[in-house]
Length: 227
Ligand code: ATP
Ligand code: MG
Image (cartoon, rainbow, N blue to C red):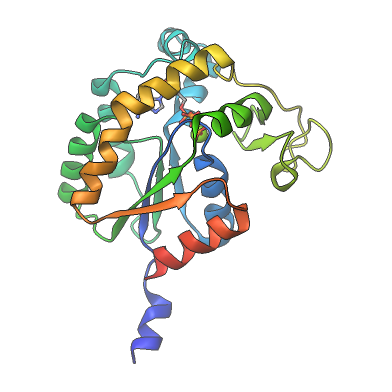
């Protein structure tokens, strides 16, 4: 009886907490392709707005390029709309939110008010030096947002500098410079790291070493999301 029910159960919703370039986007991409997850990436949403060239996009561009965080007020409003609009029949991934304690507290309220249960938090752990090396080798598709890395066999594009899915040229992100990365990593330590303890206390946290082979990371997260 239990076996039959398991197969029908939805996998857990996943909230990623991680330093910059830990691989949130890459792991999310795998879960979308293989496990039918809905993916909300705040970075992708903000970069889309920047690409539209709106006055708001110009403002966001400046903040992000310098490695700073967008205001809690703006992010909370954006995510409130996104969470309300989530499909009910699919599990989802939050990639890039929450990034501050204030955002984490707001997220709790949003999940309760939208009757969203069955959530887990995955902390993808990586040291500064490894994260910096990834940032410097990262290239992304300007159309679909998929991330590649020229220094990692597992996530190299099939054809140099071309997106496997869209067939268009890959680009470096404006904020993937050493200078901006250091500000982002500092901001992670000050603003985002305290969230780890916040979720640990709620017994929701699973720590995963972000430097083990990607196939192992996928397996660990898949198993955990099916528990
Ligand atoms: P990863 O490499 O794991 O995808 P990242 O930190 O390099 O993560 P994104 O998640 O793509 O990059 O975010 C890019 C930038 O967008 C952040 O540095 C920040 O300026 C802004 N941003 C994204 N999410 C938030 C948020 N929740 N609160 C404030 N600013 C945000
Ligand atoms: Mg990302």
